[in-house]
Length: 65
Image (cartoon, rainbow, N blue to C red):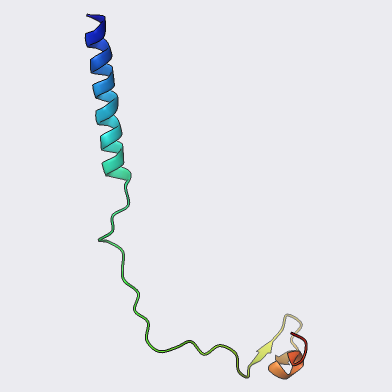
C-alpha cells in the first residue's frame, strides 16, 4: 500500500515536471530572422551636440584615443 502511494506521487511529480517543461521551453519557430545587408559605416566625420549645448565634432577628439 505504501509503495503504491510513493509511485503515484512520483508519477504525478514527473507529469508535472514534463508539463512545466513543455509549457515553459522557448519555441524556435516564433523568432523573426534578422537580415543584414552591406557593412556598417564605423568611424568617419560626425557633428553632435553635447549636454551643455556645445557642438562637438570628430576634430575635437583627434589624437586623444
